[in-house]
Length: 343
Image (cartoon, rainbow, N blue to C red; front, side):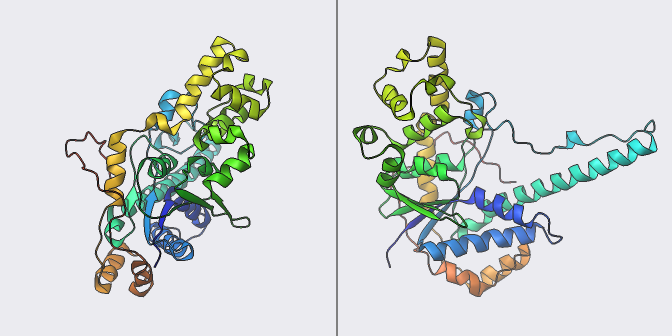
């Protein structure tokens, strides 16, 4: 059997499944956890993955510390949004406040269920072959970029997500499957570069990550990070050429160039890479797991109220190769890793 590593955007799959289930009366930890596992088992079978690594976001993000407004438009309810009911309120005000509080509490319960499923999956599913990687300050796409570009993997690897921006995170060692309901798409590294800039000398000079950041800064809008409007003085290819030739000062004022450099540094995943992150990812990729007896799975599923039989799970289990895939590098026990809170 040909081996293949699936680098999976689990954060997106969880959010997608939660959104689908949100309006159903049966939405709960149990139904969401069940659907998350089923989704990953299904895509693993469809794509022929013999190893998987599920990637997750964990804020506060490093980019948010560097860029004002990064992901700032995303609203998540908090208990501080709840309206205090006071005796001074009229009947109409009280009813309106109670209705609003009910709406806020439902959103709080929804987000809490998502978080419970996320960290339960991360904490418990590794021993069953569903390995996860999460690192404070980083998004799932950062971790995907590091795996593809900074870790030597001895087998083919494939990104799996809906997010087309993952094309800019590839290396020539991996491919990308965009899981779109109506328009699924596959890219290789070289196909992605050619599609962005054409078959030209500039495309050979630029890394995909550079093209992705340049598109963010040229067109704007990615995660509310903002754009550099002055770049539009030239067409996109010419802007890329000026960047590669260090000639942007010909088109940008000193203030605009400083803004460009700050934005580029914040959005470029290479900026945030450290050896600690690499050591952590190699450890997760090299995590072993044993073949699990059916009774072990059934006991776990019963305790967690997961509606997946051992027969269904075994189909996934026996598709996975129980061996390490990343080149062995010494993990320094003294490495100053950021603690991950799983509670």
